[in-house]
Length: 157
Image (tube, rainbow, N blue to C red):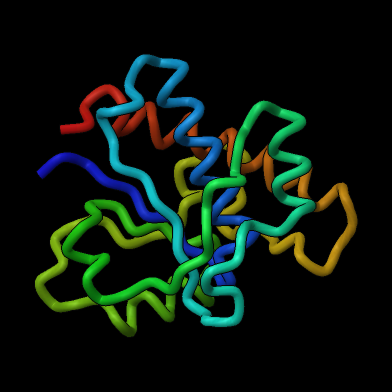
C-alpha cells in the first residue's frame, strides 16, 4: 500500500489543515506531489464543511501555503483503512483516535510532532490566541513535516 498521511486535530480548521498544506507544498518542492496521499480531519463535528480558519489561511499564505480549498470533515473509522499514518496534533486527539481505531489497523497511529526536532510532542491550538500562535504552529509544522518526509518521503511506497 502506498503511504498515505492523515493529519487530525479537534475542529479541522487550524492545525491539521496547516499540516496538510505544508506537507503538500514540501512534497511538490521535492517533485513528490503525486507520491503520497495527504488529508486532514477533525475528531469534532463543530466545523464540518467549513474552510480553514481565516487566520490560519492568512498566516499560511504568507509562507506560500494554500489552505483555501480544504473543507473540515470528521475522521471516520474508514480512514484507518485509507491511511498508513494517522497523526494527531495532541494527546487528547490521539486518545480519541485510539478509541475508534479498528483492531486490524496496521499503520502508524501517533503524534505528528514526534517527527520534529524541537522536543515537543503536542502542537498547541492557536484558535483562541493571537497571531503569534499561528506563526508558532507553522514553525513546528514545517519542522515536523521535514522529519516526516525524511522518514517516509524518500520511500513513499
